[in-house]
Amino acid sequence: QVQLVESGGGLVQPGGSLRLSCAASGSTFSSYTYSVAWFRQTPGKEREFVAGITWSGGITYYADFVKGRFTISRDNGKNTVHLQMTSLNVEDTAVYYCAAQRYGSGRSEADYRYWGQGTQVTVSS
Image (cartoon, rainbow, N blue to C red):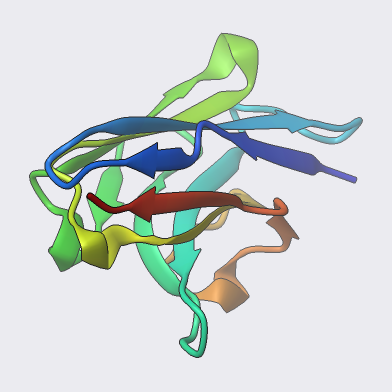
């Protein structure tokens, strides 16, 4: 089993920044074999892909609406993936989830087996 715990959410003003973290653990988890992605969800909407990083760490990919503003990175030594978010706007308000899948990757919820509980990000003045 793999456990994922998100942190770093909170309230920020428009134009501000936040860094989310996803800490992974579990007897079968290895940073070098699991791809990780961030998704987000607002009430009444489906969960949407935000950013992903492959198990090798060599490829990162983003949803169009965050390109140039968000950066995903991983610290394999600490089994942690970060999502640095800048130039936040009110439309970025959502619960942010991290997800992991061994070797796989993708932009769909179905591509990921393991999920965290989510962390709330609220962008408001």
